[in-house]
Length: 327
Image (tube, rainbow, N blue to C red; front, side, top):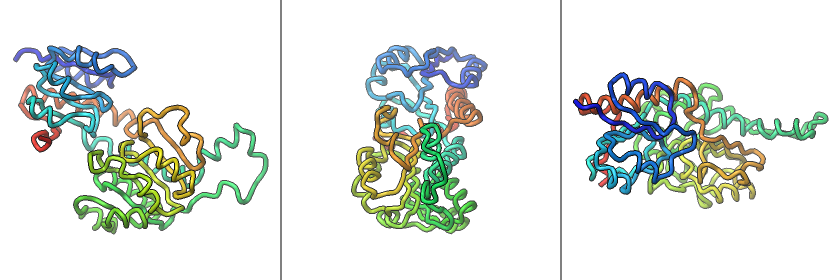
């Protein structure tokens, strides 16, 4: 077998390049911290057999048409809403991703955001450098109790399950969810109950989003959705920023339609530094760090590289995204 040429679009954990080099692949890498412009990505992928990309790279027909040698694209991510799957299928390009490995890390972020928003962590911290913590005020920094409250989950897959398990174990929260299918394990072990989307909105004290982004879920959390939620509800999104309409979220918080929000993803992403959410009370925004642990990122890099290695050695991927159904 000729040595396949692999292009890596970002600086990833060292294990990715080490595995590919050990497998005698020829690697080129975008050796800059800033993301690649689309035209540069297309230019660098010409003549390449494989691309190891990230979730922020735009993978579409323009790249497929300009890079006919590409046989596989492996993304350093679980999600693949940045990839034109139908176009990949037509071009005969296989798509790999890294599911499962970031479940625990992302669930931790969702759980942490919930607690931090409920108990005013960021608001209270700000009072110290601002000099407004001068004495005890009994009615200040009053948060929301979480014990035995209702956790609603949109998208009760692996990450949603881990979020629910933590909330059940620590706060004995009641679990409701909205899915296309039934999560039998969650219903059996956590007492979870499937509800309609409208019931999810109306009954949740904390609503945590773990769904994939697609045409049906794009900005599903909009003015209409927020208006049906409890005034004391906390909205958590660690999935994709495109699942919520940011302006509608701002208005819902400002008007008191909902109580608070914790975001690890934004719409657009990255968030502009002057976004009103960053100064609103009971709101915490993180720069998409759900998978940011040493172990998780190393595992993502390993799986993304192994997808490419397995493809060229066995014709199969460790974790392949279906493209035929996308036609």
